[in-house]
Length: 639
Image (cartoon, rainbow, N blue to C red; front, side):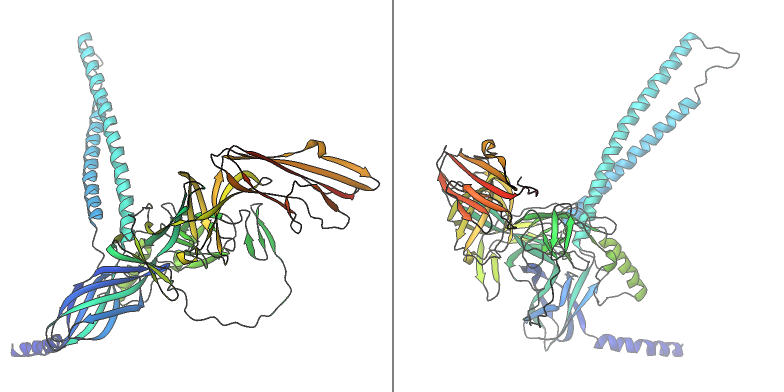
């Protein structure tokens, strides 16, 4: 017995000694106070307080996003203690706490499932009763008849009871259908909320030393990748006699795995994902240029490897973002490379955005997937992100063996594929305090905001300006007979605008979307404000001047056009009309302008331009006539 006790003592003594020497660990909950959102990524700042014991100890901050950049972790401690080291680790066992919304949906799902089970049980009883009645409907025997009165009573019973069973079954089936639909909707919503809430959490562990028991205050900051914002504008024009109202907004989104509840929000024009290293020019080795032409959809083309769509400025790109199984990746970010223009995929994985003229590539990113960049090769691009390239960073795992870890990682990949549907929402507007930096601009939102981790867009109003502008209408009736209202804005450089989509409102009516392109070095910002149906423009061919003549071995074709502009608005307008005539590319083709009604010529481009003021209710008639002389055995296309 003594030997046993001695052996036990030998076994337990090292554990007791190790337990006394091991630093004490204290779990501390922290609260997100401030978030600075970059165009890609966000810096999160947390605050916490904890009692630090004497000696060496560990302070573990739990419930933190697993998607943080470990190199970005910064810790500040206020108190009479020393921080010895900082460690980041993933906790695969501890999942985020369920939100009130998730808990209520789960309870509602249980309640409806119980009702469904009751309805199915009642339906089963009715089916068995019907089967029993039909099985035992034989009346009398082979030698024994049934009286008429008895037969009538039996028939009445069958008819009445079977009718009751059928009607009750129909009612139950209706209830079952409603309950199944409700359960399906709840499960879809729960799938979306659980997927966007985060699959697991991470921890930041501090090793600290203190000579005595003290109270410590901590500020933690780190960068998360699955967040960002992009600009959007409302451009409102009351009429051409008043200034433009420009509302500068930021669409904020995040799927970091932690909710930003009632936080101080700052939007920064910086992008921490871009390198801060200056570029170096390499030798420019010149060779012969070989143009490449490849047609898409019969309209859009590549020229020298650069996409040139038919839409010109502000052409629309749209499509879907899915995984390899076809599931929509809700909240996937689609950005125009090298710009601040972007959007996020909606509940069906669909996206659309306006492209600037020089757009060549788009960047697609989504939680858990590697970011990809691809060339813009069509006006419709469906993007498939390969789940075999899912990113799982090297992590420190708490309390889990290798086999368990492998199973958990496999489960994570399965969960990541089950992202479900969400809808865009608009947050309450807030005022803005502008803060200038050397290379970036920060907009500090005065009111607190809540941005859940669900990939939805939350719109934050940043600035509102009234801008004096010169309004002018433009029409090229050969291409489009509608007049487009344009505005030229000067002194816009100090507004810290970024390129982005703009919603157009004119005289209280929504006109659609346009592109606010600030990537220009011009002093004037040109805005296209959409079509105005109150300016009526027609372009007709003059038949009496449209003719062909043959003189010797030459043919002369004459074309003449009438253009009429009518102003139906209640005020005068300034308008520019542009048309064109052909330019000769061969000395055998002679082109002569015979009449232009005082148009301004651009002979290099073959453009005619009229600029004038048109009073309310007024009409102006323009026109031009030209002739083309060429060899009669040749053919030219003048239509």
